[in-house]
Length: 61
Image (tube, rainbow, N blue to C red):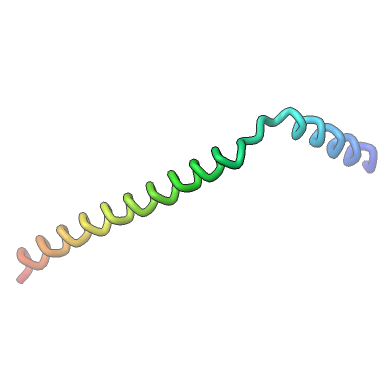
């Protein structure tokens, strides 16, 4: 059993050496993209929610 675990760890390390890690600039760029996309989407959904709420209030009241 310990042989299998050791084998797994060794193979995992070998695979991690093959990974093409992003540069710091790419990481910052992708992070800013995800944050801005999240903010933009939340603003859009907030506006749509507000519009639907106003329409529903006009219909009900």
